[in-house]
Length: 539
Image 1 (tube, rainbow, N blue to C red):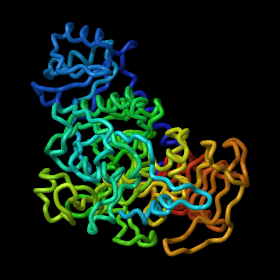
Image 2 (cartoon, rainbow, N blue to C red):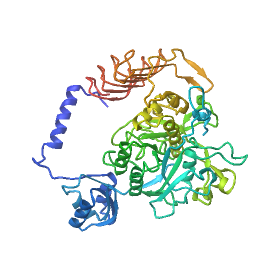
Image 3 (cartoon, helix red, strand yellow):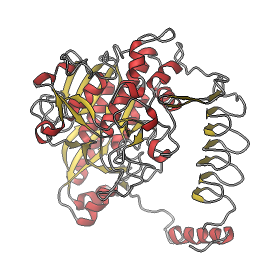
């Protein structure tokens, strides 16, 4: 594209303002925001559409009466209407309706403990007690749990089935994920090596996915709200969402993301799978494939690592299937971090769809001691939920915000993968638990080691500088992560940037308010992405 001067860009912007707004009447008619899939239904003139609306029971009933709508089901946060395209067209113009979303279909998103340092956390040390996640409740919103499996016996506190069943896992996904989080050590010689990341944690089984691995947004919303309402009864500190659906609207309008927001506001850490949309069928990379509710900025969104069968970090790569950011509509930088998700061995649900259809993934054992191998960001999310449980046993007062920050700050940055692929980097549970001080606040040190150290698992963090109270600065940085000579991550308020991520000579990401950009993404000599309002030409 030919270069366009700043003056020409301003003129074009003015013309666009006139084009879009110049002919509008003084008071434009109200129109509720619709998710992209509802817009498609309107265009197609669909005769059966399930739509989620917000409001009290009285407000829902008033809307139903006004437009002769059928209430398919009531939710804690509103209701699901079943209506036609004509009724949807009328409903969207109602002054009482702010936004509308389809009751979309969610699907399950298809390790070694040593690779994330969990085995060292279990063993404890002079400075850190042995941790298992004891007493922490994790709500697993998934396809149910096989209660017969020995890995999960006496670990399930309660079970609620939002699909109308008995909580049993007919698909096989939820059992696998739950055992990654809190599974007990295998009972036989062949299975003794298999154990959940937080084997002392408890699971709350909230089934929302059917025997085909799919379910409705309204069931996911109800499950999240149930977990919020019962969080004190079952000490629910974490919600695991190893499921997702394509993003069709901004996260603020997404009803599942709204439920996630309520959970986080209630003090629950929400861990979500990034999705398995990292490449096309013919192997081409896809960007912007993060699924809902992983697009919520405050959720911990997890991509999948391939550990290549070793406990060493040095050979880890992000799995090709793992979804990359940024998020659709909002352009939020995701995933937040990555964790082992490829060829993870965990509990196999007897007679389930996955166990019978993919029998070649069976690893060892029979009946209640059977284990199988699955891959996906679902598995990676389970690993992170287990890590959060370990962290919260160590310091139960950590807020969702602080728990996420600690996990990200102690992850191993993967510069060869990039931010939109690996986020802050590879999960390190040992570093995370060691980072948390007994009073529930991140231990903020002025300076840590200044020399680079190469270990068997890769390059160790060599320099971290923090302010003591999150307000003052040390060496011009709130957060400094990497080496002193060539920063991997610099996060603060230096003379050049509020966030700087890369090396000083050629930034991989530069984010701030320098003389050049509000957001700068690429290298100083050849921008791959440039966002902001610098006085530069677009090329």
